[in-house]
Structure formats: C-alpha cells, structure tokens
Length: 367
Image: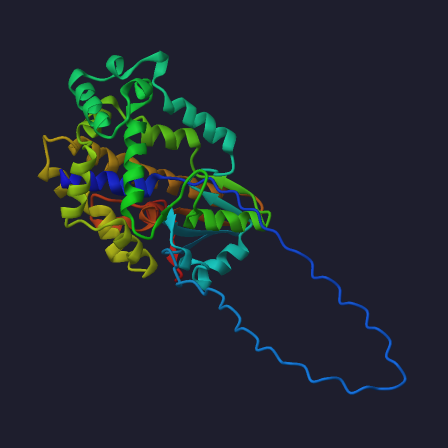
C-alpha cells in the first residue's frame, strides 16, 4: 500500500501543469520641485538632523539551480533543454547564470504544452472531466471498482451524487493533489489560479520579452494520457486509492522520499539522487513486489507511457524543430526534470537526452 501511495504522489508532481498570468507595474518618479529663489541676505540655516538610512534590502540571488540544462545544435538552430519541477520555492529564482543566459538567447520558448493557449486547455479539460454519453460511475466501472471508489470518496466527505458523472480517474487525481499539497512543508505546487512553478518562471520570461511559446504536445494529448488511460489501468489505480487516514499513515511510515526531499535534491543539483527518487517507485523491482495486487498495472503504465513514451515523443519533436526550422532559431525548451535525467535510474527508463542520442543528436550538458 505504501508504494502505491507514493507512486500517486510522484505522478502528481511530474504531471501537473501551470497556467500563469503575471502583471507587472512600475511608476515614474515624481519630478523634483523647482527651488525657491534665495534672498539677498543669507541666513545661516539651522542644522538639520541627519536621518540614518535604512540598509537596502538584499536582492535575492537564487540558488544556482541548473536543471540539468543541455545544448543541442543542428546547423544554425540551437535547443537549450532545461529540466523543471512543476512546483517552486521562492528562493530558487533567479536560476543559475547558464540558464538565465540561455533564456536571453532564446527566440522561441517551448513547454510540454502551450500554457498560454487557454482555450485549447479548457476544451481538453472539458473532454476528460465528465464521463462520455452522460454515464455515471455505476455505468462505467466494474462493480468491485465502483464499490471501492464510492466507499473511499465517502471517507473524504465527498457526496457521491455530486461527483458520479465526473471521470473517476480525474477525481482521484484532484483529491490526491489536495492531500499532496497539505503534506509538502514549503513547496508550492503550480496551480491554475495561484502559485508559480519553475515552468511558470520561465514562461513569465517569455512573456516579458515578447517571445512566442509553443507546446511539444497538445493539451488534448497530455490530458488523455494522464486522465484517460485504458480502463483496466484506471480500475487498477482506483483500487489502490486509499481513504485519507490510511494515505496519511502510509506516507508518514514510508521510507520513500517526500516531495520536500525531492525539492531539496533539485535545488542542490543532485541529479543522481533526483533520478533515483523519480525511478524508485516505478521500477521493474517495485512492480514485481506488488505483482497481482492493486497498483501494479498503474505503475507499469506510469513508467512505460507517462514517462518513457512521452520522453521519446518529446525527443522526436525537438529533433523536428531542429531539422525543419528554416530560419536560424534558438529554442529554450522546459520540461519536467525527470524527462531529462530518468535514464540514470536504470535500463527500464529512458529520457529525452538518451532518445536524442538514438536519433543522432548530441545533447551536451552545459552546467
């Protein structure tokens, strides 16, 4: 049970995307007043009290996070590939100089999806939010999964009648997200209306500089992969979903790393530890330990589709950008860090850097 809960925890961290709107403002200084003319007779002014100036507030210098940044060249085109967490701690920014300098060179920014295409994102969300053809859970799920999910949802205080038309997999994600956010001590998860993330920080740079933003995959693709897996996988994940007290007990007793520990490794640029954290709960060994139990199909789907397949797809899209862009262009591509370093976690994992190598592109680390 503990491993199953941790897999859901890591999935949320890896898959949540951010829609950010940042408004900046500044004010012009008021002009200095015109001095009054002095009289012919000079009067010695009274000495003025000199007020001590308060020390200027130190400007944050960030923590030199490099996000496993790589440079890939093809002809006159360049891609800077940068790994993020879809979350943040305020002291992380600005990022390492090598990252900030790469953003300055960028003509085009790319993320997993185009976070500014809110219409496409809303449409994709609408497509996965409700079950098709007005179905309810009773129509859609096998009896055992239906009974289990209703029991667990009631334990969370959610009335069945209010959610029975909602995609149950989406609902499990939403509930898990709330619990994840309550457990992370000082890590703000990227959200639709509040908070920021490393992705959001980069996208704000693109906005401030008036640079175009593109997505490596469409919102529809990402939503379907995350929220509409095959029914047997969905049922398997639902069966591993636990009531709140059991979930909290599992996470507190688990030897697996917490989200805050994962964030520690990211800000310390400890890539080996980060890759191990990403890989640990979804490895072949982890699946073998619970084979035949609830969660094993879900972990396999996570590893093979959500992680490996999408990394391969991203690599193909990056190769296409490099090969098919006619005008000399520099791209800054930001994806979840695991998509760049995951092959360090063992042979059952692959990542963008490894896949680019298979395609004949040399991704050179520049941190």
